[in-house]
Every structure is written in structure tokens, then in C-alpha cells.
Length: 205
Image (cartoon, rainbow, N blue to C red; front, side):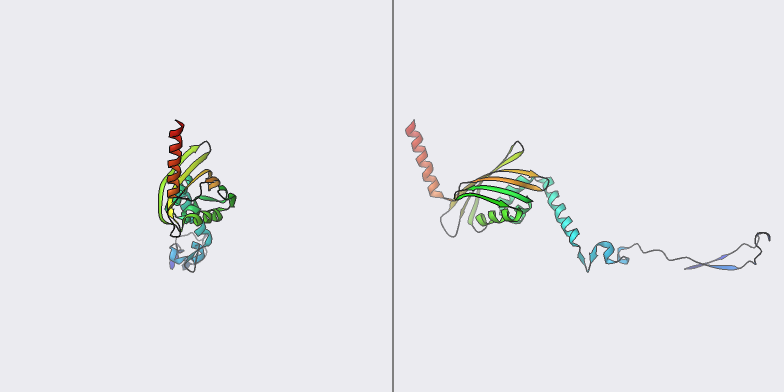
């Protein structure tokens, strides 16, 4: 775009000895401000795909925003009861440690994915899955979590399992788990055991 500016003809001759004439002044065009005029790199987008950094940042933000409405221990119980093991893994810190006392013996699992896979192996393929009980209690700096499930595995008669865990949670999620497991017990065996215990108690009286 060009504008024509005419120099004033009324300048004193001592100040302007040159003849008055029109001057051509070049004015550059305005710089683009719309997003369509910017290159893909300026928006952090290349070939229509978000950069890896932005995707990781978005996932982290969603995770922490979720914890603002639901604490990590509560989310742990909720995800486990729903058998949503993707959300279950998100409740754990990346370097989480789990010490488990199981009927076959003690076991240690390290890392978010390994711990989540262990729980998934216990419960993911069970049918007739039912949540009988789940609780969370604050105990000092820890949370005491407990859950009792009823299920059938591989077409076998239904079983009951109960687990209790003391967990520590931080800004990145649950980072320490100490778990005690009852093991899988046949439902009728549990009822028979309760009947024996009851009879023994009456006899003691």
C-alpha cells in the first residue's frame, strides 16, 4: 500500500532550498494475526497432530484435575470395584511399590504398570463379579483400604476374597501399598467355617 505525501510549499527558502515535489512513501502491509496465517510449528501442531509434549501435559492435567474431585485412595477403590484397570493404574505413582502378603507367600511388585497388571490378573476375567464391601479409613498419614468381592473364576463355584491395604499417597498418586490377602475361598466353605465358629462360641459359653 502506498500513500502520496506532498511537502509543504510554505517552508522558508533558508530551510528548504529544494523544489516542492510529491514523495512516494512505502508503508508495509499489516502482519497476519490469525491462526490460519501462522505456520504449523507456531501452534505446536505438525501435520495436523499435537506434539507429544502437549499430549503428555494434557493427560497429566486430566489426572490431577480428577484427583481434585476424588482422592487417590477413593479413586483406587472406585476403579478396582469397577474393574477399570486403566483408571486404576492412573491412581498409582509411576514408581509405586507394593508389598503383598499372599497365601502362597510374600510378594513385591514395583511400578505402576506391574502393580496394575497383578490386580488385573486376579479380577479381570472373573464372571458373576459382585462387590460385597469396600471401605476407606484415614489412619495418620496412611489410608486403610479394604474390599470384599464375590466372583466365579473359570466356571467354578463362586468364591469370596477379601484384601486389606495400608497405602500412602502423594501428589503423584499412591506410592506405597502394604496388602494382606485372604486368598480365594469357596463361598460354601466360608459359610461352613462361620457355622463352626458359631457352634464353638456357644459351646464355650
